[in-house]
Length: 325
Image 1 (cartoon, rainbow, N blue to C red):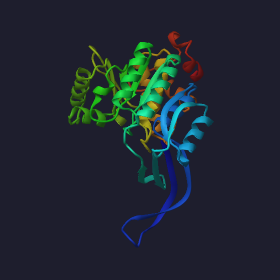
Image 2: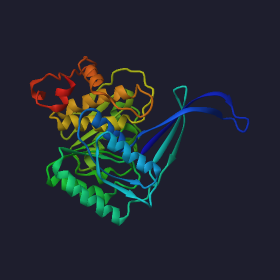
Image 3: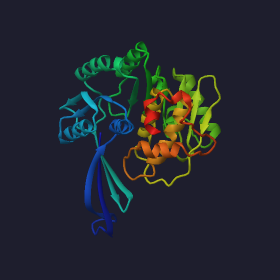
Image 4: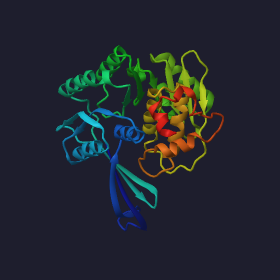
């Protein structure tokens, strides 16, 4: 999807209704949704192949252009003339998010598009280190497509990580790791998560009802909690930071934890690295990425009760950690 930003200032109330009048001074477009995951990965040195869908409209062409400009492989992106390109317009005044306007469809992809994407899955998955599934509930990540993707990834012995959407997490059965936020976990379990014990109960319920071995629930300013089958939940504290914009933080988590795992880090260290990266991007206005230098700087500074030793011998051959160091 495309993230559109209109930047301006407010100096009066509309005479037509009790609403602010935003005088727009400039505008810009960035990669949103799974495109933001791609952008974060490329920023940290990964090579990325994209499988997805967009429209044939102006914003669909803009999206493809931006993906190509950062060096992503877009040969498996389907342009469907019957679907609009998802666009989120955010209006920002004096660094305050005033309003968001969404233009999208949530109808399921056509049988023709499914067959194209299924072919692309078989073409690409065998040659990658890891598969990331960024589900925004826009009709692309159907049960049938997920079943095809997860089954083929298992056959090829590839790690799969899914950032889920919706009330039914069972469709993600078989993924290596599921990464919902606290609100998504609450909706999926029908529980009110108001404290840590409720959070742990919800996490265990997801592990019991969805066929997965690993679950990471992100909790914003409260960090993350990692659930592994038959192990005690592992809490990862967040470093206190000024939060300006949480949009895209989940994309950063998905990208960084995936890249860390692909580079040979343990699941706990990968989650902690992703937690640090998310803490950096929420301190920026708009959909943002984390640069390798700022991530390295944050990781090499001890924080909370979890210090990551990037110079550990087991990471010396990792391209990610080599770049960070």
